Image 1: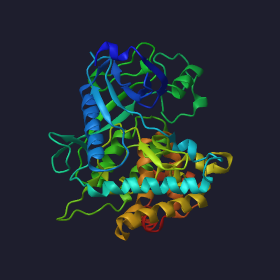
Image 2 (image 1 turned 90 degrees about the vertical axis):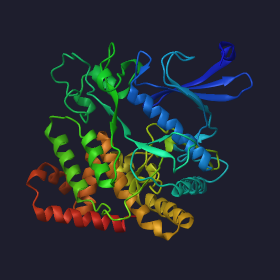
Image 3 (image 1 turned 30 degrees about the vertical axis):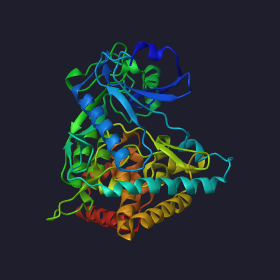
Image 4 (image 1 turned 90 degrees about the horizontal axis):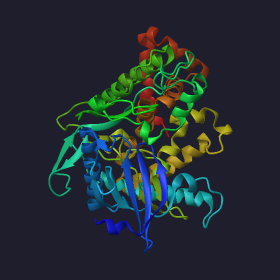
Amino acid sequence: MSDTAFSNVTVIKKLYRSYNVVYIIEFDDEKKFVFRVPIDTNKGHLSETAKRSIISQVQTMHFIRKNTTIPVPEIYTFDTSKDTIIGTPYIAMSFIEGEPVCSLWFKEIGPTPREERRHRILRSIAQAMSQLHAFSFEKAGSLRFSREPKAGAVTIDPCYVWSTTHLKVPGCPNPRCLADQDAESDRNSMCSECRVSANSRDISDVASEKSDEHFADGAKQSLFLKEIGPFRSSEEYFKAVMHSFRGDSKLPIPQLTSKVLETIIHCLPFPTQSPDRETFVLSPPDFNYQNIMADEEGNITGFIDWDNVHTVPRQIGYCRYPGWITRDWDSGNHEDYQSHPLEDPPGLLVVYRTLYRQTLNGLLGPEQDQVIRQTLVFGAIEKAIIDDTNRGAIVRNMLRKALSVSLKEAYRLIPEVEEWTEKTKEQLKDGLRRALNDCM
């Protein structure tokens, strides 16, 4: 692409996402494009791990576009080197028209009534996700294609997962600031400078992974990309991801909460090995409403943000519920949902999950029903693993549901995890099996 091609280009929006800066640009003919610039760079240099992750992401998106009608952005070009036309690594892709579902879901006015729009959104998503049923893979990991993107001509590489260091500013002199002790620290426990760091991250504050890892000038947080796997069993996958995200907090409650989560994972009834080895499937890596676009009537126009996409166990694959209709299982805010205007009550979430499950069953057949139900529990556990800000709330909720105890009793059980009896663990195991069979 020549320099003159950019002479009549306007940047109409700049968005700071979790791991990218997104530029939406428009040419004189009003055609829009999207440039995604990864933030895990060291002065424009990507680590080798990050380069492999981008290549896998691009190839997987190409695979989905070629083999389904799921509306995924088209990749026009990408470059993982420093010496690019814009001076940094990037991915250039098509612009997806529409509005994020996170905005449409709560909008009171529109061309269709809100409930009708919500139902259409869920049915449209189910229709798209059902198409991923056609593909299965022998391991959980990222996809790498050496030829045309076909399911039979693929190598399964490690999964790429993000990890962060402490939030505290290096050399913070405030002895009362707890930000360097625990990623789950209450923001009120941090000094004002570290609190700003926790709530907003600037691209210049980010360091690259592994041997390249360091704090940039003035850095407040370090971000790096890790390789784990690939895995041949869902049990192996969950335990390895938990090990990767366990954290190194020295504070007792986060340590004990992680211990309870590890115990929950140990109690899960994972698929048993058999001559027909377990298979793995694709799913959007962040299946939530900020990453799904739709028109005003609720018809889905695109699925965006495929960073670090990889194959996963079926219990958290394409059959899983969209993230915003499971918040009674996996969000700390939902413990007090009545105080949050953007939270639906638990009874309504059950209605939406029932609609979504019935739609998927109609598309895939009733034999998928049990897997769909199980995604509610496995999905909440996965979120507890990777989202340390919600880990405590999810663990408490899981104990409450599995052991049929009050929230107060669930709070009490966490510090006592080291003294749990075998009877308590068996009750937890039985409760999880019951939840997997009965959850709605």
